[in-house]
Structure formats: C-alpha cells, structure tokens
Length: 112
Ligand code: AMP
Image (cartoon, rainbow, N blue to C red; front, side, top):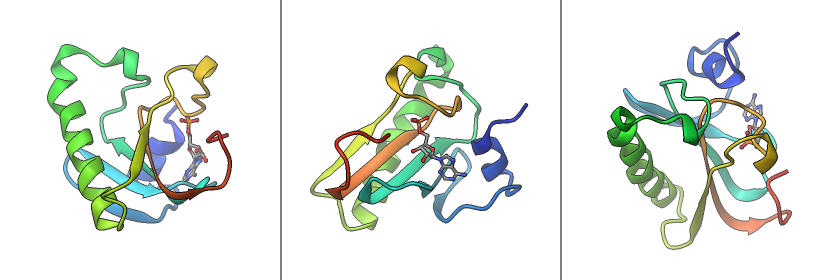
C-alpha cells in the first residue's frame, strides 16, 4: 500500500506544493502547527530515518540543504526548525521519511 505521501507525490491526492525537484517535494502540512509548517519529503520511499542506508547519504544531505533554501524562500531563513519523527513512539504517523520545517509562531508545543 502506498503511503499518503507517495500518493501526494504522484498527484493522486491534493497538496499545496511549494517546491519540487528530481529528489524531493515540499508541501504545506494539512494541520499546520506554526506559521510556516511544511513537509519536505524525498521521492524515494524510505519509511523512517533509521531505515536510511549508506547509499541514501547524498539524498539526506540534499534534503537538509533544500530545507534551508526553502525556509529562506518562505521568509524564515534566520529562524526555523527542522524536525523528524522516527517511529510511532516518537509521534511518526506517516511512514515515509519527511522533515517538518517550522517557522514563526508555533500554535502548540508539539506537532501533534
Ligand atoms: P509525522 O507525525 O511526523 O508522521 O507527521 C505527519 C504529518 O503529515 C502531520 O503533521 C500531518 O498533519 C501531515 N499530513 C497528514 N496527511 C496529510 C496530507 N494529506 N497533506 C498534508 N499533510 C498531511
């Protein structure tokens, strides 16, 4: 079964995209908890961060570089957070690796 994020990447489900390249997409979180709450998602379906392999190293670096560029493009380059939930015990609900990009006023202490 494809995850929600695979279906968003395939344009089978709607999302408000703010960035896309060959390796990743970024779109608005459906339930934002901050003024900027984006999800940066690799097109490769890695379930959790801990499932990433040595061959994913360049992809993970790409995501971090893009996180900064996207946050800056959204006006939050000087102050933003990057958050990854790894595993259900850490609050992960969609098992397709993703980075939360958070900026501005946070609406709750937690992302859930
Ligand atoms: P996580 O808890 O790290 O797995 O985060 C999953 C995130 O995906 C949550 O912040 C949800 O609000 C968000 N989310 C779930 N479904 C959608 C969707 N269809 N479009 C955008 N964001 C979604």
